[in-house]
Image (cartoon, rainbow, N blue to C red; front, side):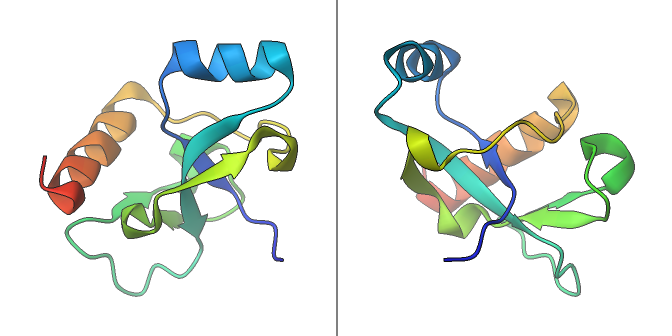
Length: 96
């Protein structure tokens, strides 16, 4: 299975609990460097705002829960404005 960057979107309190226990799942939105087309429920993630080596897009439609053991180290952090865009895209995609 390919390792790829992702944005953790589950609640901070839940993430802390999973990290403290060393097991459980976190909810993530995977990223891809294929930015040729960015749909309304996807979010462009510029490299200079993310810490990644290249521009990416958040594939909100591929929201998934992954085991904590599969989560690697932090490679960047998104600014609050970009996280709000992902939140809005999640709400649109999930119709909530």
